[in-house]
Length: 404
Image 1 (spheres, rainbow, N blue to C red):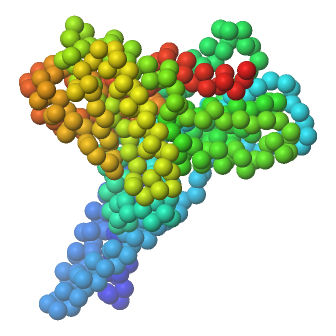
Image 2 (cartoon, rainbow, N blue to C red):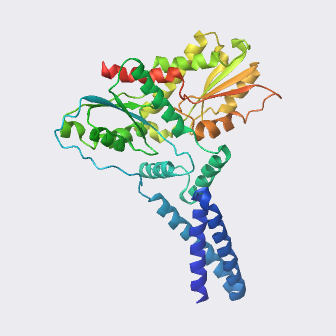
Image 3 (spheres, rainbow, N blue to C red):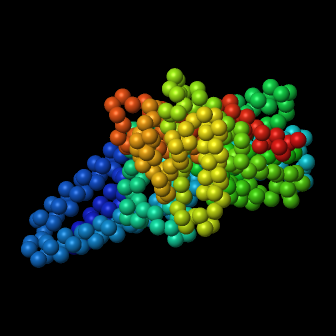
């Protein structure tokens, strides 16, 4: 009986521990208390129920069962299906609609508060493609780290900023006299999904759909959203066109935003003494085989920005790229190169991030601030793209290219 008890306790401990590391912050206390209680009971049972050799064997057995319970709960978490609701399509086949165009604003998405759906999907995709990224048993600690980032920054502004961007995009259309086009927001990793937005547009009588892809590059992310919409068979069922703008890697307008924002933030510092770092996201080398466009387009875009900055009077030796994940150089290395060049101010961008997110609010700044700066050295975070008027113009230009 005592052997069965320690097996049950150790297995439960493994499962509770994983839940403690991965649940929403409001549930942390419950799982911490439950985990500590099971630890105390397990130690008590081991102490009073086993001696010498049997205690050693029971301890090893407990450890093995703990790991098994840990792995089982991880698999349960990773097996969670996407819970986001998809509405019923009520429009009848062949219905041509009411004559207006629907713009589906599609971007990555990130929940305001900690919810690891996006990373659950990402881990599953890595596993399917054989990409070695965070061993299975260590993933709860990854979730815990992500949760701690949310707790430190308070919340992700990603969702709210994209709503502001969509509002400004609609205002731009209304300002030029367009009173009929309807706008719908959608996210890859948040609510509503791209197919949800498309169904809503269809149910409200759209006769044409344009998907505005607010991403920097063509990647698995854009492909997933496109696939969701294409599975609805809209053109075949209703005879109305569905068009995709493509991402913004080739937008000269978006590139110009970086120059304008830099000029607005250098103060009275001479351009030759300003260091500017464009930090990209980065993807695994294995992804470069399947999605070579992502790295190629991100590099091409950022080099285009550097060319514009140099043409505007910034010193080429003080302009550079860095990567947040997977690739090199890292921000710290490039910043230290700039400091050796004698720069007097540093500006940095989360160059591939469309709107404030954990990456731009926490990850990239932390990497940049790792460098050793002179006391009081000015470091200015120019952030993600956000709702800058030039960004809105760049998005609108992509849509206009399809509408006219």
